[in-house]
Structure formats: structure tokens, C-alpha cells
Image: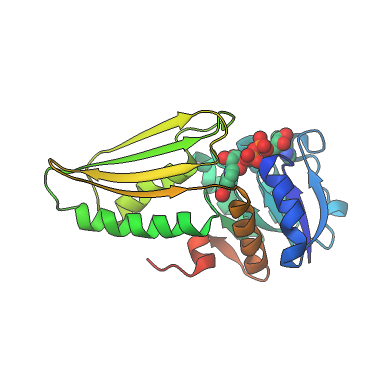
Length: 231
Ligand code: NAD
């Protein structure tokens, strides 16, 4: 199976390195110079490609994704910060009949945290006097804040039926690969659910597992679909 890497930064390089372990041959890696406004996506380049894995920028994802979809290439998108325009890419994916896995976080444990957060939202929905918060910390080069994962966790609380305000805060410093904490604070106690990344290779492993899973599927999927997490 042939795979194209979109965005040759921290994440793209890891995907390129680890792809052979998932049965993929890397057909190429496009970065800003090769792919301004999605110009690197040509019919020739996409011939025989099963899937493209995108860890780039919001602008690049929105320019590149619809072109890849139209050429029949399945997508795995990890880029964050473009979800306000998600409908554009979703429409292109559904119109083309390809498969796409889109996730703000590809790590297994972060997706389990998402499921646990949904349950916690349900359990705390009726708990009077408790306030909810989400805190995330990342390296100083991360562009979007709050992180896509923090927004995903806020949606999980809502899905669980939690309707009270949730304080969401961000820290950007040094080299932190990513931590997310969901907390509930009451008059005399605090409950926290926390996820800490020690090595961002965990995201690349998840994205490559998603790439293998999406080949032959049609539709718009999340990492929960890939992992078989219900709810
Ligand atoms: P990075 O800055 O190291 O890499 C991004 C790369 O995209 C850069 O090399 C940049 O030159 C390139 N790029 C810019 N324009 C492009 C274009 N038109 N075509 C192709 N490439 C282009 O960032 P990173 O740490 O690798 O993260 C990339 C994205 O992935 C960010 O949005 C980040 O939040 C997200 N991320 C998601 C997950 C997840 O699990 N979903 C995990 C880590 C990072």
C-alpha cells in the first residue's frame, strides 16, 4: 500500500519513519515548498496511492484535502485548528466516496479519556456545587489554543449531558508534547482525569493504524470508529 505524507514537520517525519511497520510504502512527503495552496496534489502524484496522512497547517489541510478526495485518495487528518470549516472537507469526502479519519488526537489513551470524559459529564450533570474545567499544556511552537483535543473533550462533556460552563485554559511553554486534564471541583474535593504524552510517536502510531483501517472504507470517521469505542 502506498502512502503520501502531507506536512513534513515533527509529526510528518515520524509518520514517514514508522509507515513501513504498518505495511506502507511512502510515496513521498509534501511540505510548504512543494505544495503551496495544495498545488503539489496532481493526478500523476496520486496514481496508485491508497492514503494520505496530513499533519500540516489548517490552510494546507483545507487546500489539499478536497483535491486528494477528488482524486480518490483516502485521508487521515491530524491537523488541528480548522474544525470551524470542517463542513467543507466533509462534503468533499462524502461527494468523492472515499474514506477519511479525522481526529484532533490519534493516541489510544486520549481517545479513552474522551470516552471517560463523556461518562464523567453524565455523572456530574446533576451534581450541584461542582464546577468543571479543562486544562491543556503544549510546547511553545503549537499554533492553536485551546488544543483540538481540549475542544474534543469539551464536546465529550456536552455529549454526556453536561450543560454547565466549563473553564478551558491553555499553557504554551518549552517542549511539552501534550497534557490534558479534565477536572470537577466541589466544595471539599476535586476529581481529575489526566492524560500525559511522553513521546509524540504515539500520535503517529495511531494515525498509521487509522490509515490501515480506512483503506476500503467510505465515509467520515473518527478515531473512536477506528478503535471501536462506542457511544
Ligand atoms: P510542524 O510545524 O512541525 O509541521 C507542520 C508542517 O506543515 C511544517 O513542516 C510546514 O512547513 C508544513 N506545511 C505548511 N504548509 C504546507 C502545505 N501547503 N503543504 C504541506 N505542508 C505544509 O507541526 P506538527 O507538530 O507536525 O503538527 C502539525 C499539525 O498536527 C498541527 O496542527 C498539530 O496541532 C497537529 N497535531 C495533531 C495530533 C493528533 O494526534 N491529531 C498530534 C500532534 C500534532
